[in-house]
Length: 157
Image 1 (cartoon, one colour):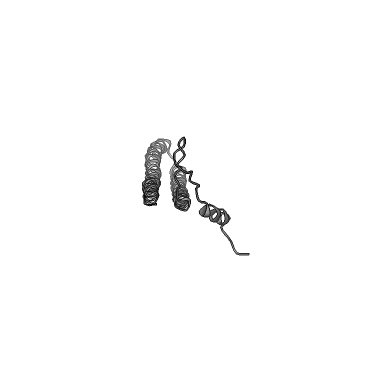
Image 2: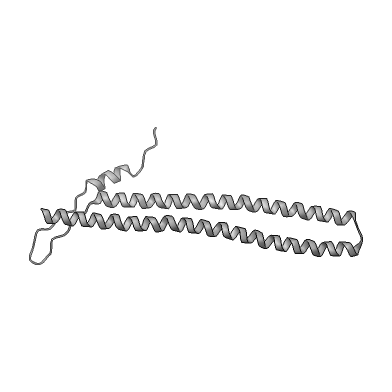
Protein backbone atom coordinates (compact mmCIF):
# COMPACT_ATOMS: atom_id res chain seq x y z
CA UNK A 1 0.00 0.00 0.00
CA UNK A 2 1.43 3.36 -0.99
CA UNK A 3 1.90 5.99 1.68
CA UNK A 4 -0.83 8.57 1.46
CA UNK A 5 -1.31 11.86 3.19
CA UNK A 6 -3.86 11.14 5.96
CA UNK A 7 -5.18 14.69 5.68
CA UNK A 8 -5.78 14.60 1.93
CA UNK A 9 -9.50 13.82 2.21
CA UNK A 10 -9.95 16.46 4.88
CA UNK A 11 -8.10 19.02 2.74
CA UNK A 12 -10.31 18.14 -0.25
CA UNK A 13 -13.44 18.55 1.85
CA UNK A 14 -12.32 21.91 3.18
CA UNK A 15 -11.28 23.14 -0.26
CA UNK A 16 -14.76 22.40 -1.59
CA UNK A 17 -16.42 24.27 1.28
CA UNK A 18 -17.83 27.65 0.37
CA UNK A 19 -18.77 30.01 3.15
CA UNK A 20 -22.46 30.91 2.87
CA UNK A 21 -23.34 34.54 2.46
CA UNK A 22 -26.34 35.97 4.09
CA UNK A 23 -28.41 38.35 2.09
CA UNK A 24 -28.61 41.96 3.01
CA UNK A 25 -31.03 41.63 5.88
CA UNK A 26 -31.77 44.89 7.63
CA UNK A 27 -30.72 43.55 11.01
CA UNK A 28 -27.71 41.55 9.84
CA UNK A 29 -24.83 42.64 7.61
CA UNK A 30 -23.70 40.40 4.78
CA UNK A 31 -21.36 37.69 5.99
CA UNK A 32 -18.12 37.79 4.03
CA UNK A 33 -16.96 34.71 2.22
CA UNK A 34 -13.33 33.67 2.34
CA UNK A 35 -11.10 31.33 0.42
CA UNK A 36 -10.72 28.20 2.55
CA UNK A 37 -8.16 26.74 0.12
CA UNK A 38 -5.91 29.77 0.50
CA UNK A 39 -6.14 29.57 4.28
CA UNK A 40 -5.35 25.85 4.19
CA UNK A 41 -2.33 26.58 1.99
CA UNK A 42 -1.13 29.19 4.49
CA UNK A 43 -1.54 26.64 7.29
CA UNK A 44 0.32 24.01 5.28
CA UNK A 45 3.25 26.36 4.70
CA UNK A 46 3.23 27.25 8.41
CA UNK A 47 3.44 23.55 9.26
CA UNK A 48 6.31 23.12 6.77
CA UNK A 49 8.19 25.98 8.44
CA UNK A 50 7.66 24.36 11.84
CA UNK A 51 8.94 21.08 10.44
CA UNK A 52 12.04 22.77 9.00
CA UNK A 53 12.71 24.50 12.31
CA UNK A 54 12.27 21.24 14.22
CA UNK A 55 14.67 19.48 11.88
CA UNK A 56 17.21 22.27 12.33
CA UNK A 57 16.91 21.96 16.11
CA UNK A 58 17.36 18.19 15.97
CA UNK A 59 20.41 18.46 13.71
CA UNK A 60 21.89 21.19 15.92
CA UNK A 61 21.39 19.11 19.05
CA UNK A 62 23.05 16.11 17.39
CA UNK A 63 26.02 18.22 16.30
CA UNK A 64 26.31 19.69 19.79
CA UNK A 65 26.19 16.25 21.40
CA UNK A 66 28.92 14.97 19.03
CA UNK A 67 31.10 18.00 19.78
CA UNK A 68 30.62 17.63 23.53
CA UNK A 69 31.57 13.95 23.29
CA UNK A 70 34.75 14.91 21.41
CA UNK A 71 35.62 17.52 24.02
CA UNK A 72 34.93 15.14 26.90
CA UNK A 73 37.08 12.46 25.28
CA UNK A 74 39.92 14.95 24.86
CA UNK A 75 39.62 16.01 28.53
CA UNK A 76 39.72 12.41 29.75
CA UNK A 77 42.75 11.62 27.57
CA UNK A 78 44.56 14.71 28.86
CA UNK A 79 43.73 13.80 32.48
CA UNK A 80 44.92 10.22 32.02
CA UNK A 81 48.15 11.37 30.38
CA UNK A 82 48.84 13.87 33.16
CA UNK A 83 47.99 11.33 35.88
CA UNK A 84 50.28 8.75 34.31
CA UNK A 85 53.04 11.35 34.05
CA UNK A 86 52.61 12.23 37.74
CA UNK A 87 52.75 8.58 38.78
CA UNK A 88 55.92 7.93 36.80
CA UNK A 89 57.78 11.09 37.79
CA UNK A 90 56.84 11.00 41.40
CA UNK A 91 58.22 13.70 43.65
CA UNK A 92 55.40 15.21 45.76
CA UNK A 93 56.52 18.80 45.15
CA UNK A 94 56.60 18.38 41.39
CA UNK A 95 53.30 16.47 41.39
CA UNK A 96 51.59 19.21 43.41
CA UNK A 97 52.67 21.79 40.85
CA UNK A 98 51.52 19.53 38.02
CA UNK A 99 48.16 18.99 39.73
CA UNK A 100 47.63 22.73 40.09
CA UNK A 101 48.57 23.26 36.44
CA UNK A 102 46.28 20.42 35.38
CA UNK A 103 43.38 21.81 37.40
CA UNK A 104 43.96 25.29 35.95
CA UNK A 105 44.14 24.10 32.33
CA UNK A 106 41.09 21.85 32.78
CA UNK A 107 39.10 24.72 34.27
CA UNK A 108 40.07 27.05 31.40
CA UNK A 109 39.38 24.32 28.87
CA UNK A 110 35.95 23.65 30.38
CA UNK A 111 35.10 27.37 30.24
CA UNK A 112 36.12 27.48 26.58
CA UNK A 113 34.06 24.37 25.86
CA UNK A 114 31.02 25.90 27.57
CA UNK A 115 31.48 29.09 25.57
CA UNK A 116 31.69 27.08 22.35
CA UNK A 117 28.54 25.11 23.23
CA UNK A 118 26.74 28.33 24.10
CA UNK A 119 27.68 29.84 20.75
CA UNK A 120 26.39 26.76 18.90
CA UNK A 121 23.08 26.87 20.79
CA UNK A 122 22.79 30.62 20.29
CA UNK A 123 23.46 30.34 16.55
CA UNK A 124 20.90 27.54 16.26
CA UNK A 125 18.34 29.63 18.16
CA UNK A 126 18.84 32.61 15.84
CA UNK A 127 18.46 30.41 12.76
CA UNK A 128 15.23 28.89 14.10
CA UNK A 129 13.96 32.34 15.05
CA UNK A 130 14.70 33.55 11.50
CA UNK A 131 12.67 30.67 10.05
CA UNK A 132 9.69 31.48 12.28
CA UNK A 133 10.02 35.23 11.78
CA UNK A 134 10.22 34.95 7.99
CA UNK A 135 7.25 32.58 7.91
CA UNK A 136 5.18 34.84 10.17
CA UNK A 137 5.78 37.78 7.84
CA UNK A 138 4.94 35.70 4.78
CA UNK A 139 1.83 34.33 6.47
CA UNK A 140 0.55 37.80 7.34
CA UNK A 141 1.14 38.94 3.75
CA UNK A 142 -0.63 35.87 2.35
CA UNK A 143 -3.64 36.28 4.61
CA UNK A 144 -3.81 40.02 3.85
CA UNK A 145 -3.66 39.44 0.10
CA UNK A 146 -6.32 36.71 0.37
CA UNK A 147 -8.58 39.05 2.34
CA UNK A 148 -7.97 41.86 -0.16
CA UNK A 149 -8.67 39.67 -3.19
CA UNK A 150 -11.84 38.31 -1.55
CA UNK A 151 -13.04 41.85 -0.81
CA UNK A 152 -12.26 42.89 -4.40
CA UNK A 153 -14.18 39.92 -5.81
CA UNK A 154 -17.13 40.68 -3.55
CA UNK A 155 -17.23 44.35 -4.66
CA UNK A 156 -17.02 43.30 -8.32
CA UNK A 157 -20.00 40.99 -7.92
